[in-house]
Image (cartoon, rainbow, N blue to C red):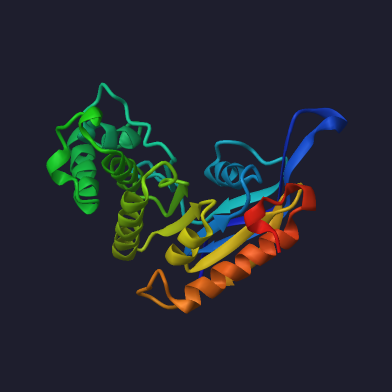
Length: 259
C-alpha cells in the first residue's frame, strides 16, 4: 500500500553549536494510506516533537519528510488535533470548525457546508450555534476533531487528544474516533502515553525510546472489532511495556516499567 507520509533519517535538536541537544535521531517511519498508527513512549521522550516535525510546525535538524499527493488550494494535506481543543471562545462552534478552512480558495458557502458536514460526522450537528463554554470537555474535543476533518486531510495527526478527559469520556471518544476513522478512511497518527489506549485503537503501535529517541519497536494488532479486555490486546500491551522498560536507562525507569 502506498505511503501517505514518510519520515526518512529524521533528527531533531534544540539549541545551537556543539552543545545542541538532540531529541530525535535516525528515525524512519512510513504511514500507509488508511492505516491507524499509534506512537507510545515515556513522558518527554519526543512524541509530540515527532508529530510537529511531521506537521511541518518545526523543521528537522537532519533527514527528510515526504508527503504524498499534489498541493491543492481547496484542502490541506494534514489535520491536527491537540490535547486541548483550543477553541476560540468568541466564535460559535460552526465558526470554530470553519477556522481551518479560512485561507483556502473556497467560497463562504462551501466553507460553511464542509464545517457542517464535519460536525455531523462527529455527532455535533445540533451544536453548531453554541459557544465553546456551553460544551463539555468531550464535546470540545469532538469539535477539535471536526475542525481537523473539515480541511479534507490525507493525514490526521492527534497529539494525546483524550489525555485530559475522565476515563468514561475517554473510552467513549476512543470508540467515536474509531467510528470516524472507519467511515472516512483517513490515515491516522495518534500520539499517546497510554499503551492500552494505543493497542485498542491502532493497526500498528510504534515505540519511541532512548536518548536521543528513535523507534525501538513496532507491533501489529490485526483483529477488529476489539474487546478491551481480550488476551490478545493484553499480551501486545505487555510486550510493549517490557520493551519500553528495556529501552530506558535504569535511573529513568518509573516503578510501573520495572522488570
